[in-house]
Length: 318
Image 1: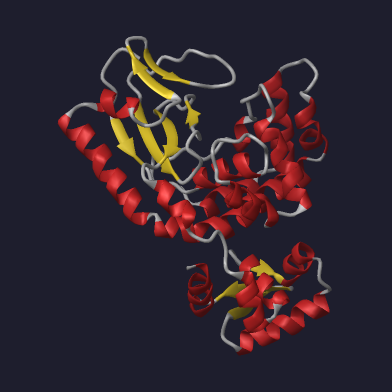
Image 2: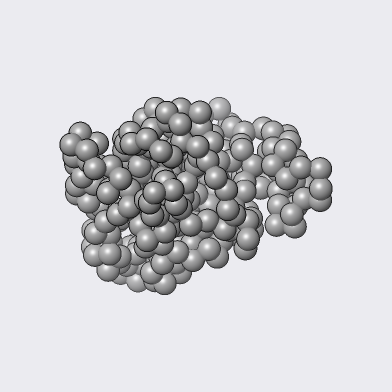
């Protein structure tokens, strides 16, 4: 990169969710506090844990194209949009992309389970993203002032000049020097930025977390920890389940926490390992308390938290 880079910023939480998964579940530690690592890990089931392991295999950073995070250059990308993209991806597309990513040689061991059961892997990975975000989303909401401040900081650098100084201050793993932008990675590569702009994506992540994509023809993007996030880590990582359980019982407390996104009755029963009849009983009580809604769509009944439930959970997170 030889010319002065053009900067923009995107507030796209799907990269925060990915950084947290890599640190807390996949084993690529980047400074996420241990309390948060344990809290996030406890919310994800065995299938999700198994699915995320290839994302942080030692010595590898290559992933198949079809699961690269959605590019935040045309607008902000939500976690739900990333989850939906994974669930809509045909399993055979993932299998083909794995072959393309790693050539004609043997597939790396950490990706073999995905190649053998691509549909199951996609389901596990999408579920892990949803579970992690159900715990992390309240923290994201509390971080809004920090994110707004970062938007202003990047805007000043883009308008008044000085993007090189800004790029060099993003993270200790990023250096702006005479040779261009140097980013620490497990696999060394050189890229020519050309006329492409740089999209900066602040994350809530460990202090050493950096995610970079350099392959898009219009722009490259760099996700990095938002400055000032250290104070947020001191907040409780999840609802005070002991207190919430005392209020409504442990099963209903867990059920409310699991509903970070709408689910079917069968999804809830499978994720919580509770008999469908028991799930129905507890959902009846939560609905009577106006904490969930139920909606029939075809043969499935979908459950969602109400605004009242969100306020209750937020109260116990403080």
